[in-house]
Length: 354
Image (cartoon, rainbow, N blue to C red; front, side):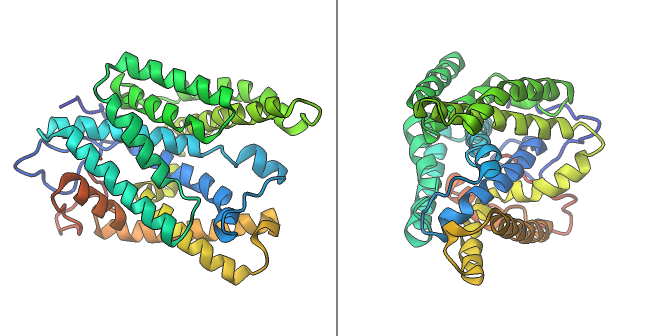
């Protein structure tokens, strides 16, 4: 089993509250920073999705600050984390003596089923089916490749997606990049200091400034250049946001940051799915044509939904190891029902990876 992260003074190691099975290795230390980043990404994805969900798929642009700082700025974080989680599960399954690729196949097929149900029943713009299919076509085969090849493919896919000028074309690149970061040991080292993330954040900010200017004031430029600037700005701002969060996790604010984002991130799949139901309900309450809603209405709906999910996530995780959909997903992945409710001896609110 790969070595666990050495504890950081400000972030003590978190252990599973459930005892390991007699057939498995002890659970790996959970990387709390990943939960925080997932929760943070959800907070940015929701405002971008509210009008498409409530309006049946209409994509609304022209809201200057939302277009510049929110739309397409958070899904790169979530996509990268998907690749990270996939590689961590590969390590965990290998350490426990399971057949890792069979397990990963079940995980992706289960996600595909969940995504298709979400697509058919609630919202045709959902992303889970895309994630599952790209995982089956790109991530799973990449597990047979050496890590240098995975990193090289990530770079090739990224360049191709930028030339194509498409936001979602970069998802395979981000999946592979996340996997490579795990395999090179980068993820095991995140959260150890604020210096590295702060320096990276400064670099991302410097790179984002000119392309944001081009996106905002490039009316006289070739539309293809403006489109490329928007895609590049999305990547750079996603990196900036993620690095700022990681830097904050090494300051006196780390407890507050974890308290706000970690509950949302630990139940990311459940919260992603229930957000659709809550937004549809909010749309009926607000009324009108969703694509004409002002930015203030969008933000108020997002704040209300996230506040409700944060409260629900915190209360649920006090008594349960996993979110409800996460529990079902884990059951299908390992083909063995994991414990859901906490017992009287459970001393914290953590769960094993993945």
